[in-house]
Image (cartoon, one colour):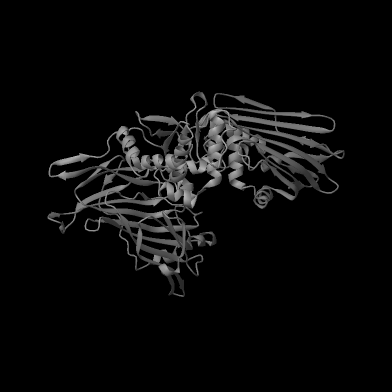
Length: 630
């Protein structure tokens, strides 16, 4: 039985899937009509799960077909399958098919062809690379997976990085469990149909008929087409009750208090913290806290040490996947393994700390109206020093020790502790800044525009640059070259490893420019590595996730033989959403152009604000024009 939290309509099945036979229209397809920019198309992605009481496990059977549309889509010939502890592959097959002169050539691979990687004892990753993938190829794979347990229904993602023509999820449910489900991030119709199985099944003395529920969606756009929140369309499930005896339904979870209390009692959360606190003495011996005078400095030292000690395996979860003993041995784990251990470590040092479960930005927001555990996929730490309290995430090496990174900033999280449920505001409170000092020297005799650029960033602006570039000079150089800045020399960065300090990038080079007749056209604002101005063509500009400010200070050395005939106009707009100022001062030897902008509030901009912002950005997109002096 299901209780619905989303809007789903009951209709008959709208598609049929034949894994063995490829349709003629799929072979002929060269471009997806609903998204002509798509690299590839998921023709179908379907899964079916059945509960097997005699082995107390679930069998998941998944099938997918992908049509490669261009060279960029060939990357989908690399398949990855991640298994958690206890899960087992029962069947796997994958094949790449190409059609040449009406003859289909197939290139299959098997489970033995996989590269197997185990980043921890709780995760096993199978990686497959299909041969002969090229534009026009059709990729198919299917697998059966054994999942221990009967009380968990895996979530299903309808949406992918490329468009999906059809997706379905079919669940065979024994009639002794009651589940709640929630459809997230979807304005599209999801069709639900529920039927009783034709045949009976037996478990011990019980004879029953399965309830078969199918969820279906079609023509699902790619993630980039629909949502700058990076929140995929998905459906999640949660056990809400079970039948202990005829007529007696036991309620499992119906309040946030019940969820709070349950987490504190289970091995992979509350008991994990308690054991971590007892075992943290090993790490405390390696840390000299005597030199730290305040509770805050002690906390920051412990967070820094745990980050250096452990490695995040890139798996987000609110529940630990291994024991504290295994974590200390492996020195790696998922987000809960690390951050729940951090709670125990801080408590062992006499500091107050509590876990906060949350949904990451790309996983969607938490709806406070119903205690749905499926909302959450991450846990961070609330370090409580009274007025100096802060949130910390030991898995995010690019964030300051007393800050959350952009992954975890997503409205509200739930503090889990021995008390009444408390919602914690996850939003950034500090204004992050980005400033650029640009000096430009136009040399008409050499047909060059030389420039020196120094960019300083703080807080989350610095966080973004650290994460994008990883302080890799080749990546920074490539970015600037793609932005029209070439022959780069003297590329330098500073304070990359010190995440509590501003991050700086500086370089010299030659700016691209256009020359029509004797006129020189130049736009130096295209080379900002991040921030509001440089994101003018991206959807993220319409949703601001943290308070931010950006400043340009542009100096143009006036050449003797040229004069400037076009500059951006002085502009000032200030409202409750943003403030923007452009000023231009022209002296005998130099033109100084300053641009200052501040986004004051978080959230999406209203349509009238969007229009204002577009007009301001259009001013900066105007080129600076030089002409020879008469």
